[in-house]
Length: 343
Ligand SMILES: O=CC(=O)O
Image 1 (cartoon, protein in one colour):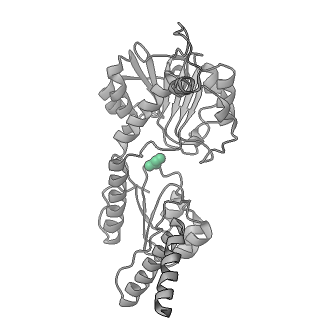
Image 2 (image 1 turned 120 degrees about the horizontal axis):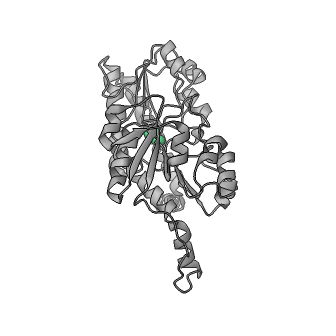
Image 3 (image 1 turned 90 degrees about the horizontal axis):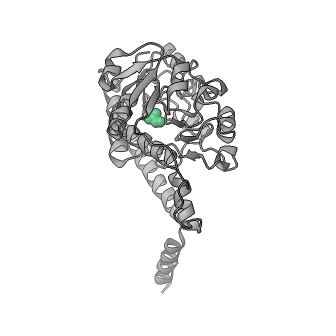
């Protein structure tokens, strides 16, 4: 009877366990497994087996000690502190992202660490989301569903919830790369009249794919009906979308950013949106991330904010993780990675 009572107590404990406790128990089991493999001398993989990122910094600094290679995502800052904590064994870094502003390239280069990243596989997904965000913003879809649900839908009114359409418009691309081209290809069937772009220099090969004209930053601002930011975040592009740019835009224009929040001065954007200097903005990226729910941008009807989901489709995230893993394994074998950054 004592055994039965013990078993019943165990079953009761199981029932009362929360999902988090179960996850914790599973992590502990995997950790013990890895420990055993380490003792046997097998190649070991230490995994942050949770969707909760960033990994607490203290724990990350502890766990990276002595590793030969590291896979990371864009929430982890890979800087001198982390590389010092990892130590001289670390020779390969593989980030599951196309952006690499979270990596200190100088420190990586100094230490002779090779770096893999995941361009191309996410281009379609990011372009698709950018188009969705652009249409959501320009046709005021969030406001519209809110009105429909909350009783604001009265009789049909001529100018109610009017927005701006792509047909006959000029679309500007700030930073023309693979993603900018993919966005333009998707927008073309909406009868866009003209594509223009700016970059540090003309990019004729890419531009010819979408028949886009190279213009100055000022011309991009003043001519675009839709301005979409596709450049990487670098010291040169930080806050490049600021008061100066917004003040030259039309008050009917829509600003879209699916690159990095750091390219936008958010105070200047708030001013431009709330004063009517520009018509609307759609952002998939902000500073910081997550953007606090008390942030003034959330108070604006003409600002649509998404939680950095441009590459978030099942197939793309699978492709990104496979590419990140393969980059890492090739790097470990001393072979060329599939996608490697030139440092
Ligand atoms: O933002 C997403 C990425 O850089 O992959």
